Length: 283
Ligand SMILES: C[S@@+](CC[C@H](N)C(=O)[O-])C[C@H]1O[C@@H](n2cnc3c(N)ncnc32)[C@H](O)[C@@H]1O
Image (tube, rainbow, N blue to C red; front, side):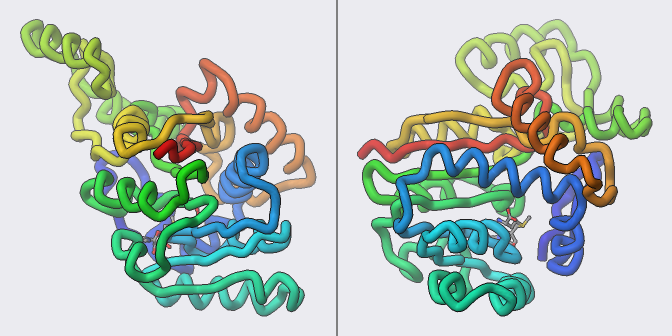
């Protein structure tokens, strides 16, 4: 269910079991802890009603339920919901009763769970839909005016970094692309100046067309046009993305602190593997 076509890029996981294993790696831990840390700075105080679209195995749901929030997970994959139930079973009753699980596609969530949420999360989901706009529009509709919308997607323009740091030079070159012809470069430059993606720079043609959901500029523009304003954006995994399945070590807190410091500032956040957008609904 999770499979995406990545061309020369490597996929992190292919199914629910694979994703559960990934969340236990250093890369998974860094991702989840950075997302929570960013959100803590933007969410209204608990108790508030949070909705997690594509909540997967429930890592964020459990984290915020432990912090006193009421969290509803809307997730289409029954195996992911089963993993969330497994995690909840080990949690205290006070946490368990704050989490509700709903099976369904995020694009149908208005009918499934209603609107007016204080915050809506959608982390690592837009890479699994062919076109991000319908899902992003639904996230805004689900959220009350003034509420928070939190979206994590791939950083399409920087995907070559993992391959390069892993020494996969053929993949790296393919992901970086080839020089454009002079005419194509001129028109791409004009598009870039108008605010379009500019994925590989005006002079370079990526070997694989960047999916629209992997373009952070496109994601931010769709959210803004739908009636939100950006509060902040963060890079996730600047220093650790190439480390494969390495487990977290005793220095995990120091790693997370370093990643947090890099992910909140230029130029480091611009080359991170994932981009975390935090928006507020304005209307
Ligand atoms: C990579 S996992 C991320 C899980 C979780 N959000 C996290 O950050 O740990 C992607 C999740 O998106 C779910 N998903 C895929 N397509 C979806 C859709 N159209 N609506 C809602 N969830 C979807 C998958 O079933 C999977 O659980």
